[in-house]
Length: 173
Image 1: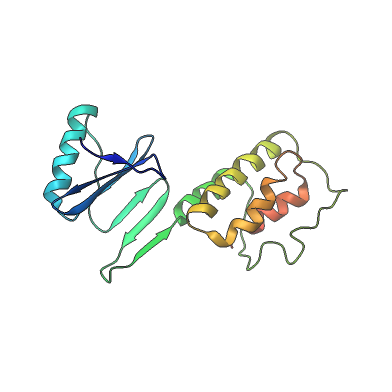
Image 2: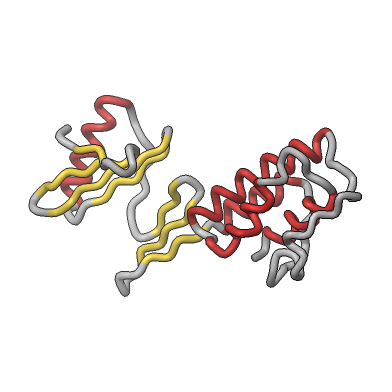
């Protein structure tokens, strides 16, 4: 279709159409396309659907892409949030997180209690899964979570009850 793959992100392709950049970003079966001219957008959607089948298409100022809520505002700003994604992850974790935390661990983030019992079985598996999902969120939309999540990443092979408590606090940063 004449698009060039972005050399820094191989899941993004660009093409100049009518002196404006047309961008397609995708990951597995999720795609976001944009161009200043809606007729060009319609044509590319038709071309893609001819090759791969009917797609679910959303238009307007609010979109969801890879769990990220993107809101293009009328004042030419964009908000990026992942509140729904985080809530879904909290619900599936079964960790019963009910309070908000201003900081991840009240100053003891890097303290490791060698006496804290190791997580086992389902708790161990859940810890690994949730830490990976929090890393995804921290990198894309909640940078202030990155330091505590990075620390928790170092704990996934030897996670303890203390680490689980830190994990509960990280959700609401």
